[in-house]
Image (cartoon, rainbow, N blue to C red; front, side):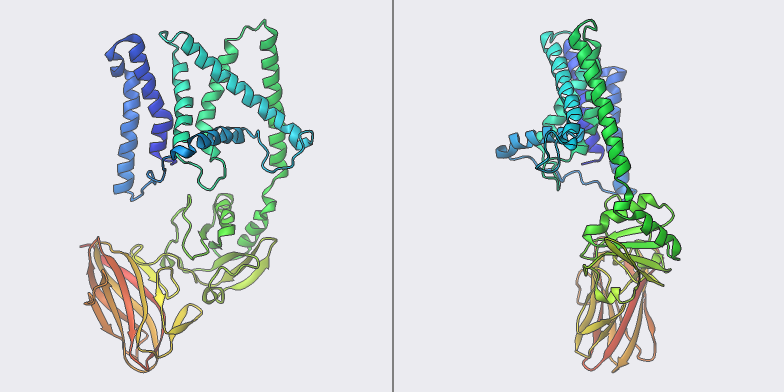
Length: 464
C-alpha cells in the first residue's frame, strides 16, 4: 500500500481532479495543458517509471495488488472504521475499556476530542462554501477537499485494516496534514470580533498545548527500558559479534528497534518458522556465506522457537526480563537457501533444505545407514551462470554415496558425483544454469552407508 501507487491515490489523483474541476469552472480545455496540470501528469509518469526501474533493475517489487474491495455488507462498517482511525490518529479514543471519564487519562482525551471537533467544523465550512457557490473558483480549497474526500472514499471502499481491529491510522497522516490547512482556512474566514471566533481560537490553543503536554509526558515516561534496548545494546558492545539474530515472532519488533537504535551492527529478524522477516529490512549477511564471524542469538524467554540443532551451538550469556542472549563463535544460522550471490552456503538445517534417515549433530546431519535420499532441496530459482557445487562431508561407514544437481525435478541430473570415502570435500564443477528453473541438490546413500553432511557451497564462476 505504501508505495508509488499510494502516492497517486492520496495526492496526485486528487490534484489532477482539481485541475479537471478548474477546467469545468473556466469552461476551457486549455486548463489541462497548463504547467500546473502537466506537473500532475509528470508525477504519475515518474512514479510508474520508478516502479519499472525498481522491478527490472533493482529487482524490488512493491505489493500493490494486496488491497481488496470491501464487500457491500461491510462498506458502512469500513467507512466508519476510517473515521475511527482518524480519531485514533488524534488520540481521541482510549485503547482499553473501563477508563473513567473523570480520571486523569479520561480527561486528557478532551484535548484531542476538541481538536477533532474543530477539524470536522473546518471541513464542513469548506464544503458548504464550495457548494454555496459551486460556479466560483475557490483555488486550493478545492484540492484540499478533494484529498480529504477521496482518501476517505478510498479507505472506505478498500480494506486497509491489516492486523488492526479498527484501521491502520498511519494511512491518514497525509490527510491530516491537509486538514490542518483547512482548519487554518476556517479560522482565517471567521470574524475576529465575534465571541465565537475567540472561543474557537482559545479552545484550539488550549487543546494543542494540552495535547502536547500529554504527549511529551508519555514520551518521557515511555522509554526503551521497557524493552531493555539499553541492556541489549550494552551486551552487544561487550561481545565480539557484528551480526545479531532475533528469532521469534514475539520479539521481531525488538530487532526492528535495534536496527535504528544501533547503526554499528547488523540485526536480522527471523520468524518462528525459521524464515527471515523482511519488514523494512536490509539485506546484509542474508546468506550464511557472507559472514563467518561470531554471532549473537536473541530468543524469547521460556519459548523454544529455535531448533535444537542450532540452539546447541550457542552458549548462554545473559537473561533479561523478556529475552535471553546467546553467543556462537561462528555463524550457525542460515535462513536463505539456494543461489544468493557469488558465493552461497547451505546447511542441512537451512530453511528450504530437507533431510531424512538421520539426526542432527549441531550444524551437521548424520545418516543412519538407510538406503535412499538423505538430503534434498532447496527448490529455489536459478540464475544465469556456471556454478561449482562443493559438498563438505564425511563418510563414516560404507562406501556408496552420490551428490546430484538437478532442475525442475528432473530424474536426469545436470551433474552427478560419486563421493570418495577418503575425501572430505568434493565438487560438481561447471554446472550451467539459466533463469526460469527450479534448482535442487540431492545426496543419496546406499544401504549401510552412513555419512555426515556439513554444508554445500555454491560458487559462481562466470556468466553465460
